[in-house]
Image 1 (tube, rainbow, N blue to C red):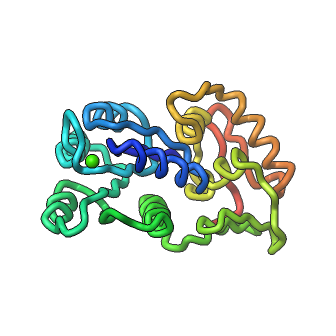
Image 2 (image 1 turned 120 degrees about the vertical axis):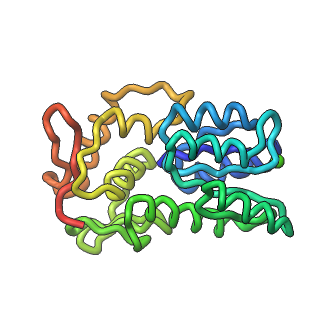
Length: 220
Ligand code: CA
């Protein structure tokens, strides 16, 4: 899952980036509204963390412009405590949730998980596909109740597919959602990771759809 982090305060931005990466997300971070608008409009993100007080273009305007352009990615706004009118304005501008500063990382991560699964129409944080279970809260994967050890890359790939059971996901979509913009992207590596996942999971659970991509099998 790829997150756009928009925060102009350097210490908070660095801390949030670290927390998000530790939680298994791929992060693109920007420190101003203009870059946020551009990146959000040109790259696919699974969710956005958006500070409202930003240089060059304020967060509310960025959000309004994204929504006017038809961009529907989940957006969680970060507001100052006691600024209730900011929360109202943010939600009216198209935000999906808000969090007042200062906040606990655990709450931020829980809200993000909820936004990401709701965007895919999933109600539970426990994702199931056949005998595979993926707990988005702990990052644990089990197969028939037995724990499966995955690398962070393998986990990200499986988590992305398990948020889209039965859907065909192209290699380019996977590349875009599993790597940040500054990462050296090579879609061949996706094939390598799919191969590794197939060795750790039931081999037929990730179906190759010729010329289109991959589809997770086994029913939701
Ligand atoms: Ca700010």
